[in-house]
Length: 140
Ligand SMILES: [Zn+2]
Image (cartoon, rainbow, N blue to C red; front, top):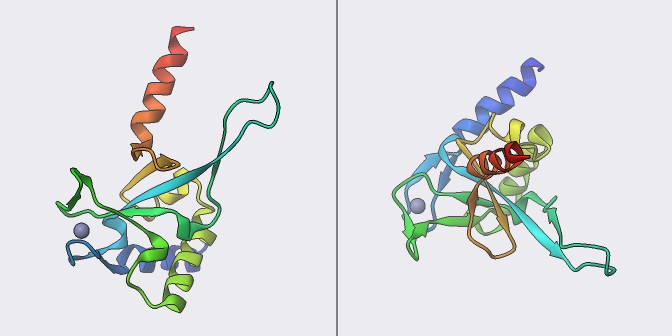
């Protein structure tokens, strides 16, 4: 990893984001990142349900690191809806996308936690999900 990339990561981790719900300011490194997936109908009778990860980072969500609840669950905000100046938001999250390519292992360079959400279903912890899948595979 180049020195400039390391510096950019540090800058992004320290970047302060104000939660629109609890109004507390926290560095980006403490927020959880939610990769959203969108649904595509099966195209033929042989085709199953298709879920695709959003490639537009602004359609992904951030989970507030404070004790910040909304409807009984941790508050999450769509990046697009963050109270940040448009150009700054494009710049900051454009850089996040450029560095992480939205890959889980690289997202952890910046964010504390990584989650997934399918459509408007409940947000799932991606690590728990992976463990559950591994446990399933061990059966066979
Ligand atoms: Zn909050």
